[in-house]
Structure formats: structure tokens, C-alpha cells
Length: 507
Image 1 (cartoon, rainbow, N blue to C red):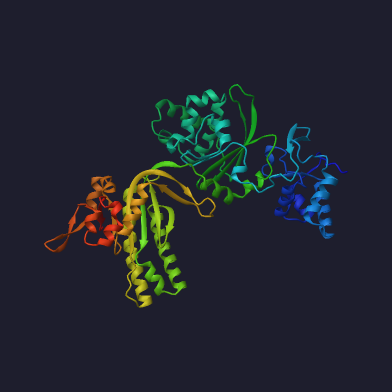
Image 2 (image 1 turned 180 degrees about the vertical axis):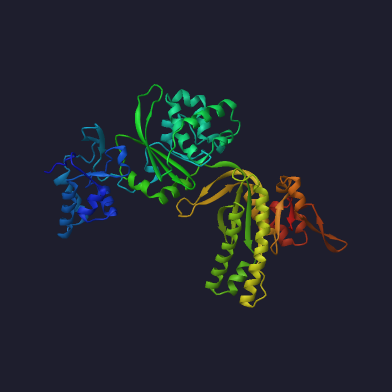
């Protein structure tokens, strides 16, 4: 019976090269429990996994048995019997020393119940959290709440209250973590790499003068930290009434924020190194599980009028070309006015304009709608010329403003969709259904939040029947029921918002 020698190690690249196998194949063998989990010799080795050299013989044995026609089940049984029988599959984790000089210890768990390298966010049993570039916690696991912050973070709904500097300066944190200054300073490295010192007073609401003064001093003392894709730092956590523990903190940077993962310095769980290297997968999982946050926003819902008829008249390839071209046109305007994509609804779309990201979020949503209406007129003219038809393409728009819980949906999808829950989005969607011939309808609630200077620039109002003539009356509102009172079908359709005061934006 062969015994695995942990004194001689080779890295994963060497193993793949010598055995002439791919990483997915190696992952599969680890998952089956016939190859031990990779380890990291020291924090300086980064994401490189190491294996005992005898693993080469194990893999050669697997190849031999496969060539002899053995099933994978038989191969697993024979390989385990001949090479790793000393490890009981149902036993507790074994400790094996692999570096006498540094006295580091890694933990192997050999067996069919091994997780392998198919790691997900839920599999990470180490403290981890995601910060946006306002240094607010967007996602956090239970381990980070217990080990780093000593309190529940996920129950905090207002995103500004999840600012890490606000949390670090709270008395609760200083009473929980003995070396709280060291943790705060580590995060200040990354703030300094992206922000100016003058921006500290605006870190979060109600920041005190003493807090600003203290953070500015920490800023001055902070080292310059390079913003490489993956940053590593050895940190010791000293919790009150508990022993010290060292962690290697991996900080991974994305356009959307920073992911912090605290791994015990003496071991790296199987699959973590490969998981962190797959940046797209990590980011999709993090964004799909963002904490719901109470935010103020303007929401824009647009729908293509007569889409069923247009679809019936066009060949499928031309209809999809029309829809894709139209959405590309929308995307250009939304980017210009800082809109965030929500999701597609039929042949339209939902976009959000967040107050936190843009103080002019309401006017930007209005200006975006006006620009899109103009662009749609040109787009419609081009298609009428191309098809020699008389169909006008109208994008009917509804806009509303409110404060709701904002999060993400469709976590299983490769595309992250943002959504808000509540009447704000529902009313905007109903107004897009109410609109006709490319009109823009919004609520009195939204218009009341437009400052007087901008309100004077807007032309808005409703069409009213006066002396049997439709007359446009500026700067007034109307209940929805009064806009549809002569159409029984539409009265029933909009009964749920009959009393909602609205107006039409003309320019």
C-alpha cells in the first residue's frame, strides 16, 4: 500500500503538464476523492495550488485502468484501496504538515463527499463581503458578520448605514475587535487608491467632524496600494476574549466593486483558488445576491405600440432586427443619462435612474425620454422608407419616482437584472400602457420633485375637451379616469389607477 508523501510538492501547472490532463479532469478526480485537495504553501504563492508528487502515479494508475476498460466506479475503488486507504472516507479531517520550516498546516479530506472544485459562493465557509466604490456593503456572508463585524449586517436596509468606515468607527466594532484600527487602515488603502482626501467628509451622511479628522489622518498614514486584479495581505484578527488568528485577505477588483475574502493562513479550501480566478463567475454570483437596499429612484418603462401587429407583418429575421436595433438606440441614450438596465418587458424595457448615483436623476430620466422620442421618430421614418409601409413606430413611455427596495433578480441567469419592488415600478408600467403614439406620461408625484428652475423649462400638461374641441392645457394634471372616461374598455383596464394624477410631457 502506497503512502502519500507530503514533503515533496508540485504545483498544479506542473501536474497538468506531466500527466497531460486538463483542469476539468483534475477537478473531477478531486471531486471523486482519488486526488487530494490542493494547498497553498504560503501567502506569497498566491493562487497556485500544490499537490504531493505521488499524485502523478495516482493519475497514471487511473489512465491505465481506463485503458483496461474499467468503469469509473471500479477505478475509484481500486485507486483508493491502493493509494489512500489510510484515509477513512468517513473520518474527521486529517492534519498533515507539509512545510517544517514555516510550520504551516494544511487539511486534507479525502472521500466521495469532497466538494471538489465545483465551488459556489455558498460553499465558501470563510468571511467574505462585497463593497461598492462608495465603500458600502453590497453582499456579506454570515461568517464575515460573526468574525469581522461582530453584528448582523444583512438586516441593515439603508445602504449608507452599511458603509464600512461608519461601521468601523462605531463603538460596537471597537469593543468587538481589539485591533480595529488595523482593519480600518487596511480598507483605507483602497479608498486612497481611488479617492481624494477631500472626499472623506462625504463618505456617509451625518459624519462628525471628529470622524472626518480621524479618517483624514488614517488616509495620510496609509500606504499606496497597487490596484492589481487580486491583492493579497496577511492580517491578524484579534477579537475580544478570543485568540488571535491569521488570515490571508484576497481583495479582487471589479468595475462594480471590491470582493474581500478572508482565508485562514494555514489552509486554503479546495477549489477556492480556481474559483477566484474565474472572475466572471464570482461577479455574477455576487451581483445576483446583492442585499436589498432602500433607495430613491426614477423608473422609466417603455413599450413598443402595436408590436403584435408589427410582428405579424414582418418576416421573423426582420422583426428581430427591428427590435435589436431599437434597443441599441435606447441603450445609447440610457448610458448618456446614467440609466441602469432593469429588464426587458415584451418589446420594451425598464431602466432605473438612482438618486445616490446621480443628484439629477429625475431630470435625467425626463431628458432621456424626450431624446428617445426624437430618436424613435427618425428610426420610424427609416423603417417606413425601407419597408415602404405606413406603420409608425411608437415607443410609449411611463415615468415615475419613488423610494423602494432595490435588488437583483434571475440569479441563475448569466445576465443580472436589477429590479425594484412596490408601486413605483407598477405605476410606471401602467402609465406606459396608458400612453399612446409615443407620448410620455408621468405622475404628479414625480413632477412635484422637479425644482422650479427645471420645471419652467418643461412643457407639460393634458389635452382637455373644451367646447367640443381638444385643447392642450399646460402645467396641469388629470386623473387617469378622466383621460379614458369615453372608452369603457380602457376604463376597466385602468381601474386600479383611476384616481392617480398624471400629466404628459411634450418637450
